Every structure is written in structure tokens, then in C-alpha cells.
View 1 (cartoon, rainbow, N blue to C red):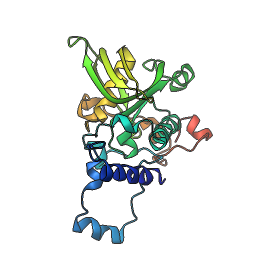
View 2 (cartoon, protein in one colour):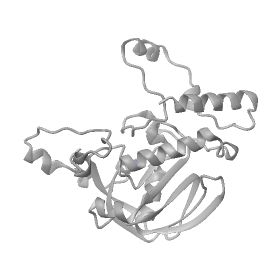
View 3 (tube, helix red, strand yellow):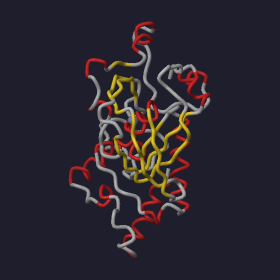
View 4 (cartoon, rainbow, N blue to C red):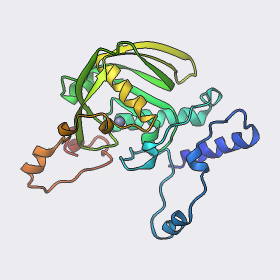
Length: 250
Ligand SMILES: [Zn+2]
């Protein structure tokens, strides 16, 4: 979708015309293309413009970079609000509990978290608990108890069909701006604290595989692979409202 193009054009416009307003521009997009990149562009299809309406996968450099702070004065702009809406749309489509901006290809410090009772039931996991919907912009997290850690399963839409056990702090405090640009602060524990740590890690280019217990990594559908004798494939974007999607078969 062309939203990012329009968004970045707008940011470039702001940067050009009021550099003080937008001192944290998207560094990656400002970088000049190398000769190799230009050469490759001749033979390979062009990348779609970010933000994507799908979740990019591990290996994409955007998932390994430190995300830029969002200028508070940009939050109220319609283009930024459209981006937040897109994040919620993808969050719902993928059945996520949390999603970060770099997963849609945009290296900005924005996270959405949330899980309704209904979505928790659909997840069919005792570890998944309801979380109130929140948008966290430029979040700063503080661990409240360094001695209290809990190990539990984690998955990530940027590593489709895999999961592993990860140890996380059980109590954290978060300060951030919400979607209106208002400062919010709250304490989180248990499942919500885990999701917050996972998503805030994304903003510094860290994935759960960097913190997992390596021998617990598993393909979440390994049993299906056996039942189908290998005749199945991973779909990297769910088909909206598809029965197979609801049955978690794709
Ligand atoms: Zn993730």
C-alpha cells in the first residue's frame, strides 16, 4: 500500500521545511542505494512500500534495527492515525496479542497490544490472558522486580509457525504516549508484562529467539506436518475470515 510513501513524503517535507520538528527521521530510508542494490533492483521485483499490510519475517533488516522516536507533534496527523489503524487491522488479521511498527516495515517506536476474552478463548492456551487495548508510542519500560522472572511460551508473527520458552520479568512499569499523544503510565504483570517486553524488544531490533531457551524452539504445527506427510505449507498472510485460518490450519 502506498500509505508509507505518502507518510514518508510528508515526513521528508517536514524534515526539509522544519528540521527541528523532525530530527529523528527514518535513517534507513534516507540511506543512499548501493550499486549492488541498484543492480539487484534491475532483476528482482521491487519491495512493496512500508508500512505493509502484512507482517515481515525474520531476516528483514528492519527487524534488527533500532527504531526512531516518534515526534509528538506528528501523532495527531491523519497519516499517522491511519498507520495506527493499519496496525490494529493487521493485529486482528494475524490474531496477534501485540504488534510493533517495524513488523510492518516501519522503524518507529510504536506498539499496539490487546487481547479480548473472545480472542483468548480462540487462542486455546492457558498462558494467553485478556489485555486491554493500548497504543504505546515511544514506550519506556522499567523492571519493578529484577528477582521475579517467569518462563513461558512465546511466538511472533515475524517468525510464522514457531514458538519457544522465554524467561521474562513478571512486573514492569511502562510510560508512553497513547494514540492521542497523551502521556500514560501503568504497571503490568504476568502475561501483559511478557507481551510488553516482547514488543518493546522489537523496537531495539531484538527478537524472542535472542532470549529463548534454544532447545525449546519448535515448529508449532510439527504434528500436522507428520499427519500430512509433509504436504502442507506455511502461509505468511492469513486469509481474512477463512475457515482454514479459523481452524489455525493456515
Ligand atoms: Zn514479535
